[in-house]
Image (cartoon, rainbow, N blue to C red):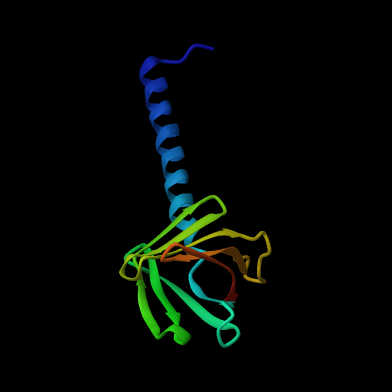
Amino acid sequence: MKFNPLYQTTLLRLVLLTLGLVVASASFAQPLDLVGEWKGSYNINIDGDREVTFTLVVTDGVLSGTFDDPAAGMMAIAIESVTRTGRDVRFTLPRIRGEYYGTIHSDLGTDGKPVRIDGDWSQAGEFIPITLIRKP
């Protein structure tokens, strides 16, 4: 079967546009499943376990948030960027030269969203393992 060249060009453009929309919507929707409050704890052999909280929100389509470490006197520190590549995630906090690198665990909650991130907190050249659990 032979198609008209104009028809082929139009069909190709439609397929590419549809593909572009699917990729764009998937890349936008992907981080939204991380929205919420994520809690974890660490122990550096000083006064026992210390709890930290990463609270992620979407504002104008951009994922950002805040970080709290009450034991260290750090409250509402801005998470300036959230990067996600597949199951790997990175939160960047330039104000305190901190970063969290993690891998989203395959466990999902009843809402179909991830419930656990296994990773490391990095600040001042130190790496501290912290598992984060999303609070319902």
